[in-house]
Length: 417
Image (cartoon, rainbow, N blue to C red; front, side, top):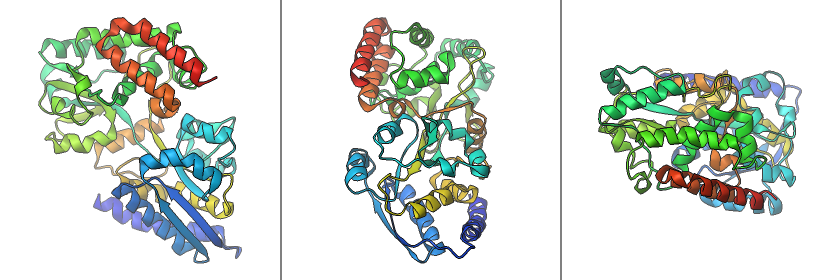
């Protein structure tokens, strides 16, 4: 980590020079720029405060006013402030979560920023940032999802990392035969089950169908959804998941992996630190990409992406565009994400190569065919809630599948009309 921080200090100077060069014609940013952030947790807050201070130093004639709002409160306030009191820059999320603010004209089209080198450097998220052929924001961080597994138990059982569904199930059967569960999971707060649905649907039917489904353009009673659920049921019927998972949060499911009762956890990279804190070492814990299910389906990945946007009612769009461009540069993204412990989106940015999980995620996402944002970001809130309740029920009572899918379909018909 120390080497990253040293590199970042140099990088910030480089970025500053580049940005200053952009205004070498004597033109300077001026006036006020208001930034609304949902980065209320300590690490994200400190990260943004540092980046904003750097930008402020580069533009002494520009007065920057920053407002930090609690993350959950931000989600309920954004529509109001975009309408009544729009800042110049606002944080939000990629994918369909942008849609309500794009279709109502509250977000500015920033396709002009997605040109030249920057377009190539941010290419992995371009699909997630695009609606109606235009880009509506700039990403600053994301993180990978995948299988975090007990390498020492795999070695003990003679298992290798699976690359396809048959190998995944064969491994799982050997794990079950050894008296263990294949996967830990805590579905008390529902969303962890959505991670399984997302990956199973992405691998069974592909990114385009998955995104059409979460956008309300496909039926939940479609045979392709039933195929995804059939693949899921194969694992359920094998006894692959820990018992009583509805009683646990995602954190409370970690001990099953740590004490060896389960051998893998489908989760985001944010889980690595608490897993290590619970006792596992890098020699025991490793990572692999969710395996191929349907031959020929490109390998899209789950990568919740946090983004910056310019409200259409912003007063200082010139400064806002300069700030978004600044945050998107490789050097700034290296610095920011070293502090956040997440992945830079810019493929020219650097990551801490001493962290094998960060390194693996960076390589996997940069080679992904497309990126999904996660079920509760890709689907509207009401659809996401009913969907995740259905996924949890399915994991406990798979025989209820028809009723569950009919309930989801009725919700789709109501939510998207």
